[in-house]
Amino acid sequence: MLTYDNVSRIAQRVAAIHGLPLSRCIKKYNMNGQNPGACDYKRGEVRISLTGAASNDVYLLAHEMSHLIHADHEPDFHKLTARIEDTIKEILYEEYEHSLPEGFHPIVSAPISSGD
Image (cartoon, rainbow, N blue to C red; front, side, top):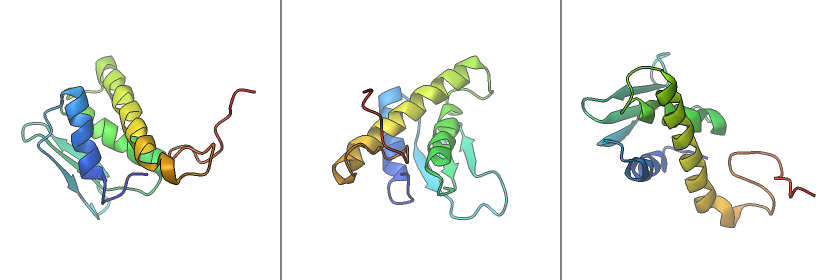
């Protein structure tokens, strides 16, 4: 799960993997009813206010990081957002898999089927 303790570090890892021009990820604790995320692509900054809902927070971070490259919501933006989401989930899984009950994933709150 993304937290205020790990979101900046994870954002930097994602930026390095995808070659995104991220200078910093600013954690906003209260955006006073405004959008929970924002991107200033000129400064390379992403601002995020985490909601506490794991899948929403992953998408929110991926969405704002995609705006570092794409200003609009055209198909290339959505493709990049999906790739970034997958990367964030993989990083979270790497970091938390040792502390999870067998068969659980940090993003999905139900057991992962073994395909049997």
